[in-house]
Amino acid sequence: MEIGREVIERCRQLAAHTEEPGSITRTFLSDPMRCVHADLRAWMEQAGMSVSVDAVGNLRGSYGGATADAPRWIVGSHLDTVPHAGAFAGILGVVLGVALVKALANSLGGRRLGFGIEVVGFSEEEGVRFGLPFIGSRALAGTLDDAAPAKRDADGCSVADAIRAFGLNPAAIGEARVTGEALGYLEFHIEQGPVLESLNLPLGVVTSIAGQSRLEVRFEGKANHAGTTPMHLRRDALAGAAEWISAIEREAAAVPSLVATVGKIEAQPGAGNVIAGSVRMSLDVRHTNDEARARAVKHLLDSAQQIAARRGLVVSYELRLDQAAVAMDARLIEMLGGAVREGGFVEHRMPSGAGHDAMVMAERMPAAMLFLRSPGGISHHPDEAVLEADVAAALATGLHFVDRLERVNG
Ligand code: GLV
Ligand code: MN
Image (cartoon, rainbow, N blue to C red):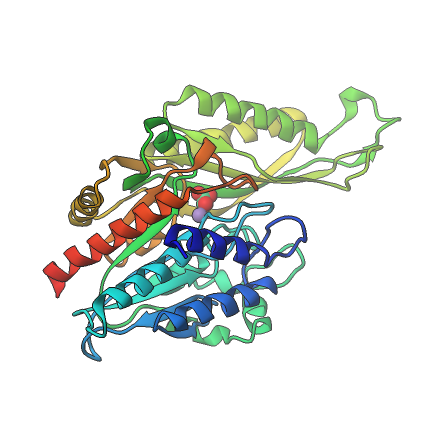
């Protein structure tokens, strides 16, 4: 089968493994993740890889180099999704990694490279289940917070419980860390935005990834009867939160390159005839400049305090993620750009507004990323798509990139 089509069909097959029939939702170590592992494991083995699962549930396929102690290259992306996701964010990078090894093994005809290739399907990047993004890549990079295993999901299940329920051992998380010599990290990912399509280009070489802050914010007021409590005697947590959301939107619109989002909100007790006594909400703030992001977060929290004080509410927050902006490795950007041109494509360099496992891996080793055009600029949505020809272009680029790596590291 033509390679672009095979990769897309595999992604669609994996999309059928979901927590919610009829839509794609797959969070950290949920049951459908077992089926994703089973399919990917079979494809990895067919491509000549030996496969293991580490203690945070990263699926790791290893294609050895010429010697047992050869260093390795890591190619990866994530297996989890947002709720009601598309079929390609994350998983495409893993399936493409397997296709890369398969194509490489065919072209080498038994010869091995001076380095091995490890394809990693990270168990968690989106942060949906525990509000704690990058559990998979942080474990690999050795930067997972000591408090992470105790974090609980909405049902009270901790990260450590989820690991045990999946048949893994949370005490062995430290062993997931990359050991030995790792030369670098490459991630394929859909762009998740409209830029490449607007330029009519299939591929983009990522130069940097915007920093992110993620917080959980609570407004506490007083629940009371919706019919008997006059407006001026209310302490309505939801009305306070709503005022703050509007302030967030105004602030973000006024600061160049700042984006800020409240994507989730829960009001208690949650009845139409009861004034909301408490609200729990998410806040996601991103900027390519870390100081600008920190300033924005502080300003937004100050405005929450002012709104709360005026309305007789109490506001509190927990910082869930403070991820600095990260530059991709300059030498790898050159090599990846050269590989794009060698395949006959235009090299376009661009920053990423979305977060990626590459930003965590970059703390541990040189990292590079290749974007594939997102038709319609759509992502984190069921309409997410990718073109067969663009997948073939990414694979050809990956093969040229490995060639270049071999010349440098072989
Ligand atoms: C990860 O997909 C993000 O939210 O940027
Ligand atoms: Mn992603």
